[in-house]
Image (cartoon, rainbow, N blue to C red; front, side, top):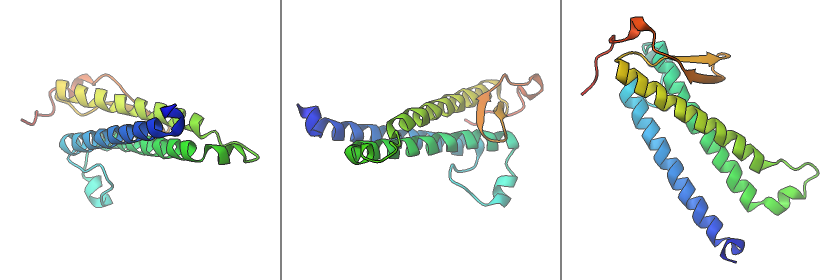
Length: 154
């Protein structure tokens, strides 16, 4: 009964929104500490001095944030305007888009953390590969010549 009236849905959305904000805060701090650049866009001159592997790691974090914010917005719109959306000639299926975007968010979040952990453990640049130019990325084994190349920051 409570769920039907919307109180549970609002509480759940507020809780999930808080988790999104905390996740973005964690990723932003991790990017700043590991890549020496902020998560948000900076001038190209400053970014051009950052190593390509750090830029790729930062892009993973930015895609993580982008996908979860877009997914959360679509989910809230779907919850709020569900009857109106179903009355449209073509149903936009926002709940399905929510699942797709949340899945991409999880992928980029896990790959970011794996690349970051690997680079700290191996004292090396984060090793990632991308399909397309910046479409989908994943962590790869650190090349031997990179291991021990970076000092840990204590």
